[in-house]
Length: 365
Image 1: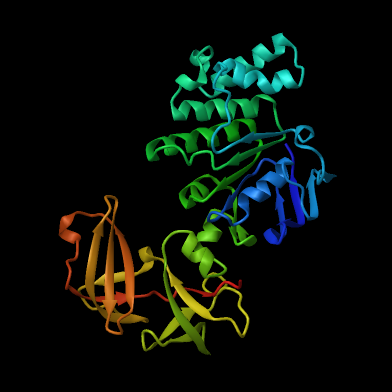
Image 2: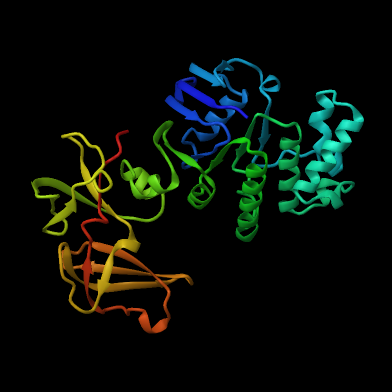
């Protein structure tokens, strides 16, 4: 196992800066995820860790050893690609054994290690089958086995589940996590899928336009986003522009022009992100935190509205409410049966609890 330290990493392709001034320390045995939209720099960063790209500036170290310009074959990393990169003319055994053959491991040792890892990924009965005869999920397991059999210090996975259907993705998430926990291996995972990142990671780095926006645990990233990009990319949220007005007791008062009202927010680090005097501010409140009721609601930040759309998704129900100011707020509740669903045109009261609002700045580009 290794720690991975990226120090002031920048990668340029001609005039294009793919990654800019990136500083991240990944701990030994950690499951660390790079999350962000396409073209944000996450795969470029993974390839610099693997050695397929060298940084234009900065330094890559494994356990304090400088690996910045060390070639891939000398880094002892295992890589699982998005398209699996298996050899279709080879059997499962031959694919998994390939890395050991390159490393000149003896035939007896190779046989033992391949059989052991195929049992781990539950493919030992397919050992002699051509990989072209396997399902997508089985091919994914072969790719994992091939990466793990060389006993790497670091496991790198580049969007490995993006080609699988939804049910198979869920199964493979659990499989990857099980193997990572079994081996205790430092794992770096690239994805654009927020559900994968939230359910699998010890920590997450959120990327956008070549810059890391925030690093934290799944709960920190979700509950305490540092800006509007992170708040929107991780889950669903209601974002409404606000401006600071005054402080009162343990609360801060912000004026919301769109709602034509003052908004009260608890004055804690959980509720208010760091921002500068000149930043444009927004309030973020998750749909599951919005309270709606046909009966009157008491307390702060209560507004009248009308239901304009109800979406049934199975486990939950999304309700869109148009407030009297024409602002639209989305609320999400667990599905408790048809009798609890509101209907279009229903007049309701909406409460934005002061302890559930997060004040954040607009992301700087």
